[in-house]
Length: 329
Image (cartoon, one colour):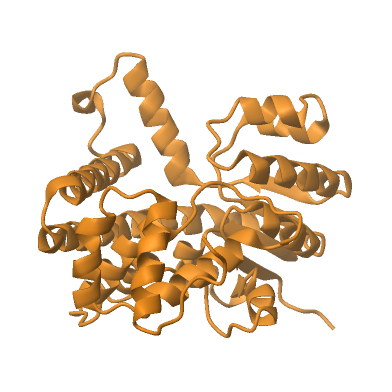
């Protein structure tokens, strides 16, 4: 009996602890589509012509431990005959724009009818909104900072829509060539699976899959791993024209969340999922904060380190008889 080809959009963040789960799932597919622009050095690394250590050094890697572990897994999978592609046209265009500027080009010389110009405009607006947030968060009032958070989230949501639309269009014809496709994506790209399904029609079965959902459930949590800032952005992506009564509270909680979450890669020999546990704890903590409480905490936490912010919030919640971090930090 013949079956339709199928593809899964695997949603997860770039953390070392996700690699074994991703690699196990990838093994059951004919093709893997990574969330990154094409890179000749990557193919050299897969073939073994370039060491993984040297390959990682060629990258401006925010999460080097993740990349190293993933490269080890991908090299093994490539050796099994699984096709591996880097498909992220938005970032590919962005790299080309940066190279164009570094070689003496200017925005005025970009072709306004070319897709690269669309990428340039999306990045220009998003960067301006992000810089405005940084400036406002440093010296502005709580209310002004909330507005800057919401403005950036709205702009960012439009950038994600452009990026996902481009990726869906690039992926669709490639997915048709394989029986089982694995598509890597960050959790914020949830809508991408619907775009891909729309482009493929009924010829391929497409579904989303949260890679670490089983781990989260095993920890006794029946929820997602979205922080308040991502939830706000996703609401703008999914319902851009509708007013959102939760947006002020989500923006306020996002401010506090960003001060509490540990951003650097973590490795703990006694804890297999340090990032997931940390994210779940911080999400649970900020869910207890009202808009008023966020406003009270904001000036205190504005210039605090992560450890200082955790101590302040823990003391505030503990004094109110509320749940705090499970560890002393």
